[in-house]
Length: 387
Image (cartoon, rainbow, N blue to C red; front, side):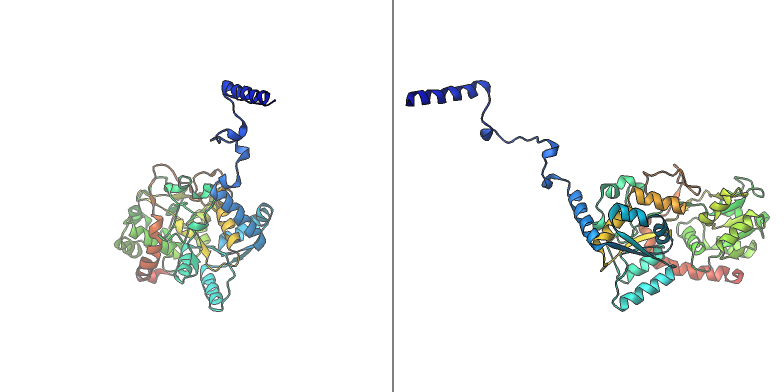
């Protein structure tokens, strides 16, 4: 009987050797496993972190935004979307930059930590950051469509500072002039210097640079980038009888109706509705270069945020394709992302070969260190003309 058993064992062993097969327990581990059998540990790390963040965010239940225009837009257009997509309630507070500074500083002084995110003018973000109220954003970026630098203008994420605490999501061309096309021929004004010609005396309205706003910002940046100098503005004020106005819509209306043929330091957002309505007005660039409206809005992550995971979810959604398409379409201002449609834009769209300024990383330094100097200069030059 033992002989028969040994013989059977030898026969079976010979069969496996002859066929190249072996029992499964003795086979070497396969290096290629079917995708459906992959363990959780083999999933991309960002996916695990995103799933964990989503679960924590849903437990928090809410995201709170403070800011100027974008939060109001998001409240109107994204509240239901955000609830359906992530199960989160979107709460917003919209106010002007100065009011936000006062409110946030007052809340912090009393130990109140209410907002998770600040979205507003870059100067407001810089002040809040300077007071120590914000955290770096880069660690919160999880989704590949956000972290992929090739999807952003210039091939890099548009940080405004080396510590990566403020994200500048707009990069919309801001042509410095608006002209009445019935009174000014296209191409007739090619340079800032052309406005010094005698024929434009008494015919220019200017966005007032003596008060905080777009006029002062353009006044400063044109000099910081050596497009013109202080003497240019002195000649403009002294020789051209420039009219100053702080009412951005009224400035545009004056040009559209022919009261003035030229508007200097026009606001594209205010020009666009008149263009759409068929008024004889057009934004106009100059050969010195066009400044991108990067400072018009920035995103910051508040420290000690009451809903930290919900804040991370919001940041990744807002800076992703869906969020940036929504804010671009709603504001009619081109964002930094290069992989979304510009079909709905009626304002400026970046064009290949055009000269655009400035470098985002220099903007905060300009605002904090140079802005006050140029504010004083603007008041000295244009103060007598200001209304």
